[in-house]
Amino acid sequence: MTVYQEDDLTTKTIIDKNGMVMLPLLGQVKISGLTVGQATAQIQQLYDKDYLVNPQVNLIVERFAERRFAVLGQVQKPGSYDFPTNESVNLLEAIAMAGGYTRMGAPSKVDVRRVENGSPKIYHFDAGEMARDPKKKPFEILPDDIISVGERNF
Image (cartoon, rainbow, N blue to C red; front, side):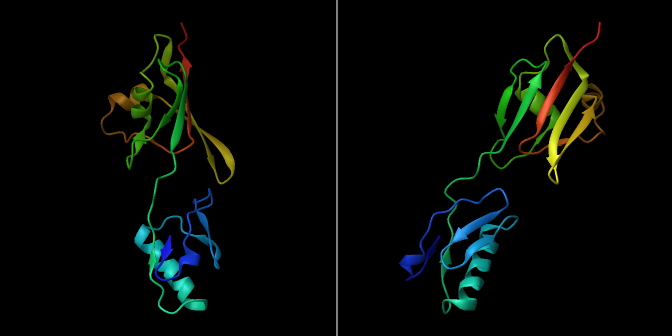
C-alpha cells in the first residue's frame, strides 16, 4: 500500500485468516470479501476520517494466498493440491487431480471434511452417482477441505 506524498504510510502486509490487515495509524482493518477497489476506498475513508485530507491510496496485490485441499485414501496420487488460479474445484475434479480411483477405490464412499464455524463437519457422498447424473450439481471444494476416498468391499 502506498499513500501519495505520505512515505511513512507505505507498507507491505499480509491478509490474515480473519481477513484483517495491519496498517500504519489505523491498526487492524477488515478487508476480506472486498475487491481491491472497495478495499482502497475503505482505507481512503479511514485515513480521511481522522488523519489525512483527501488521501490518495494505492493498493497492489503482490500475490494471492495459497489455496489448498487434500485428497487421501484410495486415489492414485494422494496428497495436497493447489486450486487453479481464480478457479473453483468440485469434488469430481479434485479426485481427477489426484489421478482418479485406485482399483480398490470406492466412488460410493467419499467423505469431505471441512471446518465450518470453528467445528469440523463431514459430508458423505456417492461420487459415482454424482458422475453419472448430469443434473446433479457437483459439490464445491473449499480451501483446507480434506477429501477421503474409501475402500471397496468385496
